[in-house]
Image 1: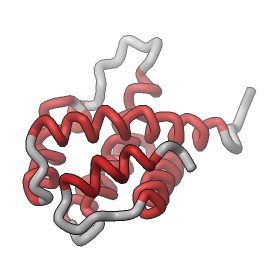
Image 2 (image 1 turned 90 degrees about the horizontal axis):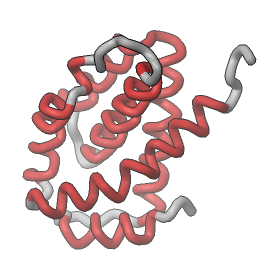
Image 3 (image 1 turned 30 degrees about the vertical axis):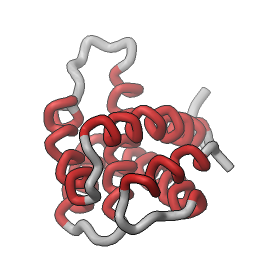
Image 4 (image 1 turned 90 degrees about the vertical axis):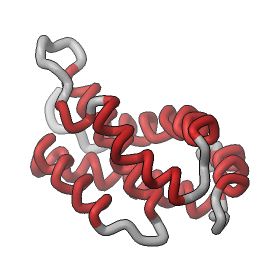
Length: 140
């Protein structure tokens, strides 16, 4: 388990339809794997397209889109580390907030709960992304 007990507890207390820790863990892992695969095949533009499509097709697993978005933001930040390139505008804080805000509102999370949830899951999704980026890495 990747530490989702606290996440599941926080998530369950704020959402009308609680999800299990296993559900959250499965979606976090899927988002990390998917974002890395898309990045490797289609780059940042592919991640933008996939993220936009996800939010356009929200269903009962709307938090998966938040996880995919977080994973894609991490890849963008990781890719740009040590370069002079600016971050991809799509993944900037303001645009990210505009995408995830409605998800949290729809699930009756206030700003404090949403920020606490994001603070809890961000390091987890970042580690999963990093692990998948290192896995099967091409080159030195």
